[in-house]
Image 1 (spheres, rainbow, N blue to C red):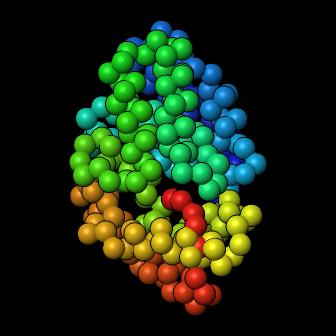
Image 2: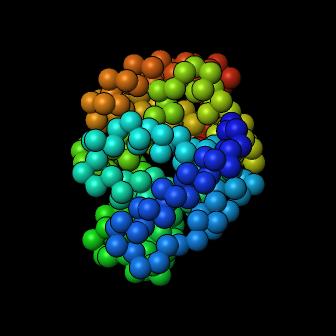
Length: 221
């Protein structure tokens, strides 16, 4: 789904990454190259560094909502750093890798614990307020993208699950999408709800009709 990020985008992300660690009190900055290597793994089509860059672009325009914007930034950078399609513990494993980096960099316990909690929270997107809700809304912003952007997102998710039987994929994917449709509100912050809720529901309804028309699948957001 994603275009290859430009050297300028990656350089800016590296500066942002190092700046967050330092300002939060880390004695050392983890290897940014390791994070990039994770996001470049061949099994990924959607959960790549471009998804993280898109999240950071959303943070740039919603940062005023964050109580601790530097912590939100690192949570977004790490939230999919470990990703194996089909596993149910990707977020926990991402938080664990962040924890290894936090310990090695001697990041203070308070920020480390809060960031890890936000990373784990992206598994279910259930937080109602605070920085965790903001991280979740940013992670789900793709649901409210243009019809073309949403179609590319859906195609990329299918690519990550290419090893799954089509009928099983459709049944599982329908469950995931329906869980968003049945939520009272997909987005918990008024900023994202006003901008993306209506389009997200239109996109999801179209995707569900398409899945049902083809029969009926499993994939994560």
